[in-house]
Image (cartoon, rainbow, N blue to C red):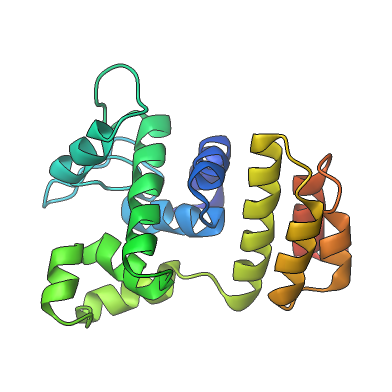
Amino acid sequence: MATQSQVSQYDAFINKAAAKYGVNPSVIKSIIGAESSGNPKAVSPKGAQGLMQLMPTTGKYVYGLGGYSGGYDPFNPEQNIDIGTRYYSELLKRYKGDEKKALAAYNMGPGALDSRDGKPYDDTEAYVKKVSPSPGQAVVGAAKDNALMSLATGGAGGAALTSGINAGGAPELLGSALGADSGALGAVDAIAAGPT
C-alpha cells in the first residue's frame, strides 16, 4: 500500500491532468496508490506499466490520440498520469458518468465489463470500493476540479463553481471561498481539512 507521500509527490501532474480532463484528482491519486503504490517503474505480472498501470496497448492507443511530444514512455510519471487520466475520463464518458463502472472498466477492461453486462469481478468490486472517493471527498474533489479548471483556463468560473458546489450539498462557505480564482485551491484544501 502506498504512503501518502509516495503518491503526493506527483500532485502537480495529477492536478494538471485532472483539470485537463475534468476528473476528480482524488480518484486519480487513489488509482495510483492502488495500482502502483506510487512506483513509476511498476510492472504488473500481466504487463501493466507505470504509476497508473496501463497495459501497453491501452497506453499506446491513448498516446496515439495526440497531444503528446516525444516517444511513448510508460515510465515517465507525467506522461503516464496524463494518459491514464485521459483514459479514465474516456471511460467516464463511455459509462455516462457512472464512476463505479468507469473504475471497474479501468481495472478489468471495458470489454470484460461489457461482456459481463456491467457486473465486475469480485476483486474488481473490492478495487472500486478502495479507490472510490467518500461522499465528502467527491464534493471537495469536484470543487477542486472546478477550481483547477478555472485556474487552468484563466476563467472566473465563480458563479458556475458556486452553483455546482452547492448542488452537491457543500456548504455555502465552500462556494463563496472559491468564487475568486486566486487562492481557490488553497481554500478548497483548507475547507477540506476542517478546523485546526
